[in-house]
Amino acid sequence: MRKNVSLPVLTPDGAPWDQQPKWRRDFPIDVPEDNYVARRDFTKFMVLTSFAFVVGQGWIGMLNTLRRGRKFESRRIAAVGDIPVGTAVSFNYPGPHDACLLVRTAEDTFLAYGSKCTHLSCAVLPDVAAGVFRCPCHHGFFELTTGRPLAGPPRRPLPRILIASRDGQLYAEGVEERTT
Ligand code: FES
Image 1 (spheres, protein in one colour):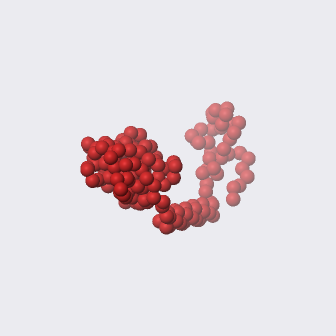
Image 2 (cartoon, helix red, strand yellow):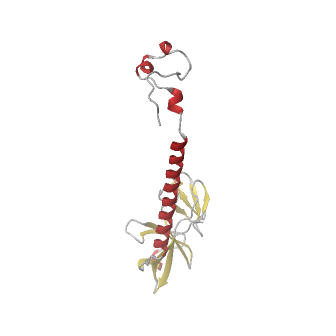
Image 3 (spheres, protein in one colour):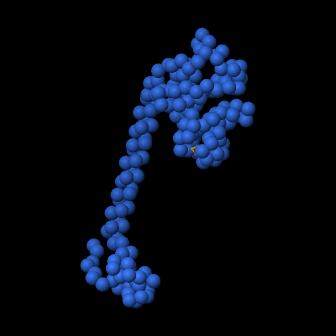
């Protein structure tokens, strides 16, 4: 518990109070008392911080469990013939604000990922010739074939969009969230 001290004992620089600036004399602070943290306060802080950490981890775990059990609808993205090899189209999936990219890297190879950078959510850009997605915000790079981070600040891969091809049309059919 904090003691009531009318006159501070020490100044921050150790000089007497009449040599301190006016603002400090007007608002004197007892430096040793101000720096004093009781064991009980410290314990309280540690218990509350640990509790908040446990609640946060539980919340993240619960969201991941809910996401894993989520059912996704099948949604048409584009016709195969509309995407030349070496190009990409953007689409939204599973929600209207979930931006994604579908890239055709070869005649029969289509890859799709969420296009929000896993660092701070900037939009990544495909560079098919270089085999990467680039994030212009902080020079992050992701591997085109896997969506895994290659360089820069991102540490988690881009979410993979599951693709199906039927009757010359490409469909998004699910989202694979990955942590590594
Ligand atoms: S937002 Fe993409 S690297 Fe920072």
